[in-house]
Image 1: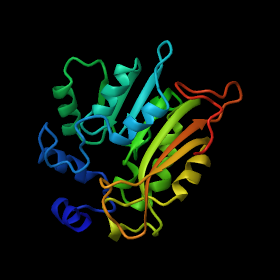
Image 2 (image 1 turned 90 degrees about the horizontal axis):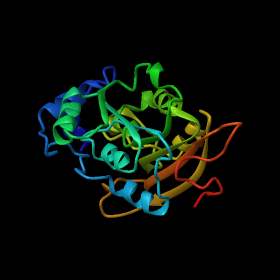
Image 3 (image 1 turned 180 degrees about the horizontal axis):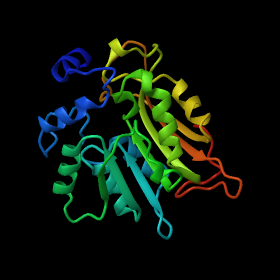
Image 4 (image 1 turned 120 degrees about the horizontal axis):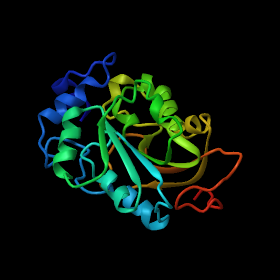
Length: 238
């Protein structure tokens, strides 16, 4: 879909976030026109939850990066978390508030490419699905650093991404599929990989060199404790 999307929304590598507002403004609250909208908890997140049940202890905070239509945030709220969910598109946030008017999730407009110092190491669980690959490759390290910074010491990060073995380049997206190197990039930002699954199914868009959907769980390094909400610290790579 890269060429059509790029032409339709006039994606500019130097104004990487601008196209999201136009896309959502031309869509509607049932998700029509949003290529990544599931209108339900993301299937890979659902499978992960079955294998590693997640629930909040006391009042734990969760953050959803690039929340889109909001369903993953509602899933976390149902599991007892105090949830913040943000998206670059104000229209997307408006849809979330319309769809989930009775929810206590804090839906906010915010830009991942700008400093969000108020969220630094504030969250016990952070969820990132497809946000990095929706932005041009030149911003990958900045995005990874920002996402990693939101996780509390001892907290947990789940990253779900489509991955291929080709070098990332602006001309190849969107989406700009990640490479396996994104895992090491998160590790360089104070996180340890605790488990990983690679999914291959018919719902994945075909692409030359594609390796599958990486579902990677990280723990933020901490001197005081090693566990995170819902995750046994003895888990290893799968």
